[in-house]
Image: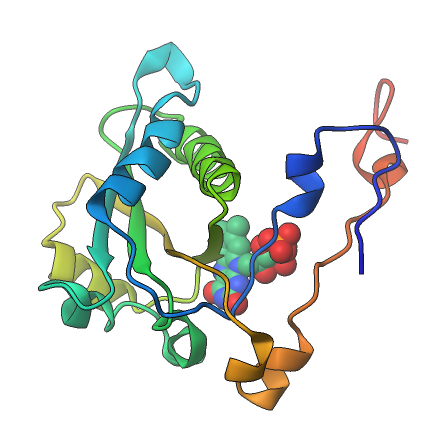
Length: 183
Ligand SMILES: Cc1cc2nc3c(=O)[nH]c(=O)nc-3n(C[C@H](O)[C@H](O)[C@H](O)COP(=O)(O)O)c2cc1C
């Protein structure tokens, strides 16, 4: 399925999608640094940049510990990613910590896409494991876990997940946009 927009937009918005099939190829620290460089330039309230990203590359010294962070469903597919990255926001830094960090994640996803890599965010995580593995202080809110890597073949997935490996649609513009008050 090819995604169609109602109006002409930059193709990156339609071409980016969140696969579950990854090749298993480990990323490099430079890949991750370049991807997070994209996030670094996101706008934030008072330029507080209330975000932090913690990662493990597939097979490195932290990989096994990071593998305990996804929940059971996500563990079925995300351990084939090239890296796992936890997106954190700092509650003590800004009242807009979550909103701003959401924007930074969007930039991160688009930078990875521009590099020919895929991202897949996950809210389905074991929160206690994340806090333990990353030794998080009170000020840190765990926003999500992100699988990043080279796309794989959907035949590598369990059948039920392979079936869902298709770009998702969107609500119509008329449902999310109002000229003036909501009707
Ligand atoms: C914050 C967030 C949490 C998500 N959590 C999960 C998850 O736990 N498991 C999963 O398979 N997909 C998860 N997704 C992926 C979404 O389902 C996906 O982004 C959405 O269906 C739109 O598809 P697209 O990203 O391919 O355009 C999450 C996405 C976001 C942004």
